[in-house]
Every structure is written in structure tokens, then in C-alpha cells.
Image (cartoon, rainbow, N blue to C red):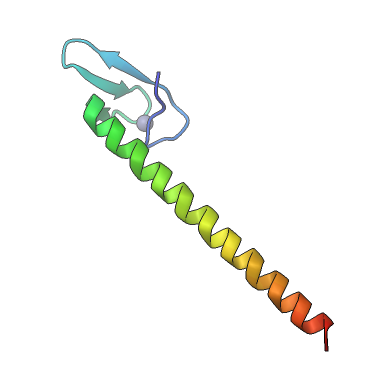
Amino acid sequence: MPLCPECGVNSLFYDREVRQYVCSRCGSTYTAQELLVEREKRMARRFEESRKRRYHREYLEWWLSAKGSQ
Ligand SMILES: [Zn+2]
């Protein structure tokens, strides 16, 4: 079962009656389509974070090497 995008830790269960995924912790409901959108958003955010981290590391390496060559 997919994790709740809201809580991030709680598994959703599928409610056949409403045809939606329900979180028993926070009460959020998601359709399969919404879950896909949420997952894409999360992946995009993760990608953006790793890009920032890489940029920061490269800057730090540049800064350290520039400092060391003086
Ligand atoms: Zn939740």
C-alpha cells in the first residue's frame, strides 16, 4: 500500500466503497490519480533537493581549492 503523502509514514488503505485511498491517521483521501500526481511532485522535489546539494558541494570544493592555491 502507498504511503500517505500528508503524513509520510502512515500507509493508506483502499476504501472500495468510495474508491479512494484513505489515511487512517490524518483522514486524507486520495484517488489513484491524485496519488500519482503526489508521487510525481515528491520525486520532483527530491530531484530539486539533490540538485541543490550537489551545487552546494561543488561550490564548497571550488571554494576550498581556491583557498588552498593561494
Ligand atoms: Zn495521513
